[in-house]
Structure formats: structure tokens, C-alpha cells
Amino acid sequence: MSIININDMIKKIKNSGINQLKNLYQSGFILKESIQATPKPHFQLSELSNFLDNIIIFNYNKDRVFNILQRRVEKNTSNYLDYFRLGLFMIDNNNLLEAQQYFKQSCLLKKDFSLGRYWLGRTYELLGDETEALIQYKIASELDPRNWRSWLKRAVFLIKKGMYELAYECGQNALATSKKNGELFGILACLAFRLNYHKEFIEFYSEALKFNIKDINIVIQLSNCMIKTENYEDALKLIEKNIKREPNNLILLNNKGYCLNMLNQHAQALSIYLKAHNINPMDTEIINNIGTTYLKMNNAYEAQKWYDIGLKIQPNAAMFNNKAVCLELLGQYEEAAIFYRKAANLEPHNPIYEKNHRLSLIKAHKYENVIDSCLKLFKTGNNIDADTYEEIGYCLYQLKKYDDALRMFYAGLALQPNNSILLTRIGLCLEKLNFKEEALSYYNAALKVEKSKKAI
Image (cartoon, rainbow, N blue to C red; front, top):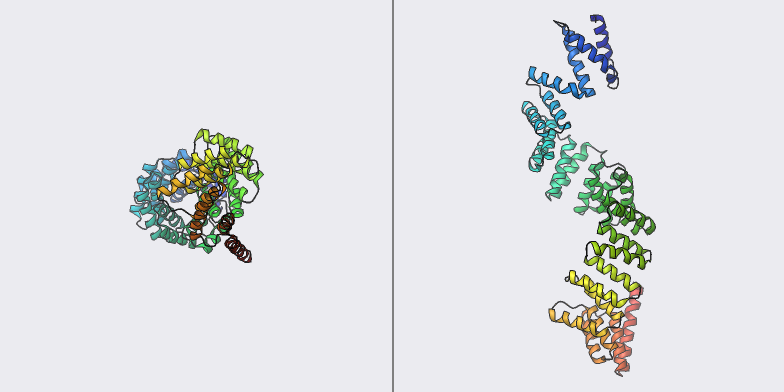
């Protein structure tokens, strides 16, 4: 090949845009072979040889890249960029320890090399050393405050350490140099939620909705925050925008179903939950949610079938409780009481299950059982609320023990003086005991309480 042809090639390369470099790929190899065959290459040929190396690296021919970079660092051990490129090559081929050594050498040669520190931190992160990774990301962000990726990584690791305010500060620094990043807005929204920055939370998640967020974990965390703040429509938008990349992600499907239920789109929610169940038939949370959706659709019969399936896999208090709700709706109060009792036995410190058990017994007209249950509560020394006094008083009233019932209602009223139910119950007892005027005064007091509620 003549010098003229080579000069023409140099001119053509230097006048090409970055996209046209790929078109010169094969020509580059032909020129390389010509140059390597020249005993004493002209200076211009040597310059072209280095330039063509860069074309090969740009096009990433794996068979040749490593050899080119190795030859370069052997000739010039002070070129930090070639060590950096070797590190990138190694990390791309999952040789993390070797990549780490090359990045270290690159940073030794250039002390203020922020990008090198970032990738060194990345190797530590991938190798599971989060402490050292955080150190490197911190150095990288201090060397170049415009390196938003380092600030973002710092924020992520600080969140894991529970240092939310500092993480939020790092996220803000990242935002100063990168305003088009869904992950960043998502992380900042989650942090704002945790720090009770309500205005900022809405602002950040509104921005996050504009992007396809690559990190699905951020989508999950952000959707959780939006659900907790009852922003169901926006949470649904976020999930639908990002779920296409992981259509079988059970957490996202579960969150989507929950949002649809809260928006009264129960049929659509059921479809989503059934899809999730087909992916993992053993997931009891999904099974419970299917049952709950049937309940919302007023289908207690179908709902209890799903709770039965879940209870066979993994019995838990919430599902026993839900099964009991179905039985109550089907008019099977004694059966319901059995399942409420099972829930209460599994979680004895949860007063709701115990209360539900008593109420189902009342509906089954098992008044003595309710009284026994309440007496056990008295013996434990637990705080008895006004509702419990009302329940035991009601049972005593049904058993025509009006004096005893009256004492229970008075005890409840002492805790809640404006409880219209208790006022009415006292009036009923007094009437049964022939204290007509006193009974009327309590009825009037109950009416007054109800009127004041309506006025509010």
C-alpha cells in the first residue's frame, strides 16, 4: 500500500464522525497488517497504528482488545488510561479481581482520577465488600463532584446503613449534575418519604414517573412508599410503566393487585393475583390476597376456598381471621368463633382476634362463653377498654342479669363518657329495673351525643 493511499485513509478517518468509525473497521485491520509488515514505519504510519488500535477497541473485538492493551502497558507503564481500559475489559468479562488490580494501578498513576475510583468501588461492591466500596465512591465524588454516579452509589450504601439524612444529601448532590435519571428520582423519593419530607416526596416521585427505571428494586421500594401514602393511581402508573421488563416479578404483581383493589377495580386485581399465583402457587401472601379480593367482590364462599388452600400451606393468624370472616358472612357464627380462636392463639398479643372471637360468640348467642372469656381478661390484669365492658354487659343483659349488666355499662361509660351505645344500654337496664325517669335521661344523653356527631 502506498504512502498516498495511507494518507488518504488518515484523512478519511479524521474527517469521519464516531458512527462512521465502525464502517472503517475492516479497513483498519488491512492497514494494521500493512503497517506491521513495514520494517521501519514512517512516523505517520505509527500514529495511524495507534489510532487504528483505538478503532478496534471502540468496536470491541474481544479477540484483539486485550492483546492491544497489554502491549500498550508493556511499552508505557505510566499510561493510566490503558490500565483503566484493561480494568473495564476485565470487569466486562467478570474477572473482578484482575479488574480491581488494573483500576488500582490506574488510580496510583493518576491520584485525582475520579472515574477510576468509581470503577474500583464497583469491583469492591461486586465482590461483596460494601465498606471498601463506599470508601472508593466517597473518594470519587470528592475528586469530581460532577461524578453523579458516585454520589448515587454513596446514597444507596448509606441507605443500607440507615444513614438516611446523609444519603438524601448525597442524592441531592447527584441531582445537581444529573436531572434525567429515573433511579435517582426514585431513590430521592424513597428517602423523602422516610424523612417525612412530604412535598419533596411528591415532587420526586412525579419526576420518577417520567422515566423507565432500570433498577426494579427501586421501582418496588418507590411503589411501596406511594402505597403507604395512599397514592394508588400514581403507584399503578409507576408499576405499569416498569413491569414490562420483569412481567413475572411477584412483588410488583402483588403491589399492582393491591392498587387495583384500593381503586375498586376488583376484577382486574383478581386477574393480576391469579397470574401471580400461577407463577408461584405456594406463595401464601398471594393466596390470601386472592381470598381478600373475592371478599371485596362479596363472594365469601369462593374466598374461604382460597383461605383453606393457604392454611394448608402455612397456617397464620391473619388467614385464620379471614377464614372466620367468611364463615360469619355465611351465617356460620360458631364455626367462625373456632377460627377466630385459632388466630388469637397464634397471636395472643393481638387484641383484635380476641375481640372478633367474642363478637362471633355473641352472634351465636353463646353469652356464657363471652362472659368467661372476658373474666379471663380481667384476671390477666390487661387494660380493659370500654367496648369490652359493653360486650360483657350486653351478654349479662341478654341473660336478664340487669344489675350486673348495669355495673359493666357504668364501668365502660367511665372510660368513654360520650359513648352513645353505652348510654343507651344503661337506659335499657334502668328501664328493666323500673327506673323510668333515670332511663329517659340516659336516652336523651345518647340522642344528644348522636346529634353532635351529625353536626360535625
